[in-house]
Image 1 (cartoon, rainbow, N blue to C red):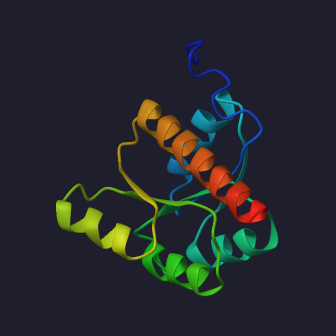
Image 2: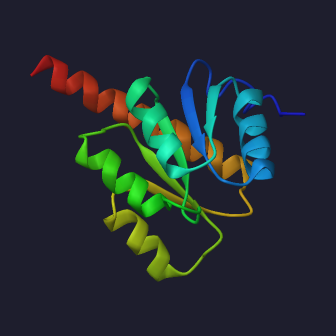
Length: 141
């Protein structure tokens, strides 16, 4: 059961979870829904791109290692379409070089598997707030 401090931390956010592993999609969406988020899921990079470009998401969670189109290719294609919402890399690789590759490759943040619920929720909230503030300041310029 979600503790009270995180129970509604993501209230109203729209989040896309892109991961080829059904168990990972289930676990992550459960964490997000318990925190108040609305979720959509995609099982590969191509499907994730299609959903991200057709619907408004506050944050996208993207697995790095997927067959056919990995997370690096998917994020590259989204950024080529000027996709500005935050995209968080999810990976089993905890090496510093992998983190740097993710951040220079178009991801806004990087989380390692197994996913820490607390880190996941905090990272999403921080990035969603930052993106919303940036969007507001652009609209006022």
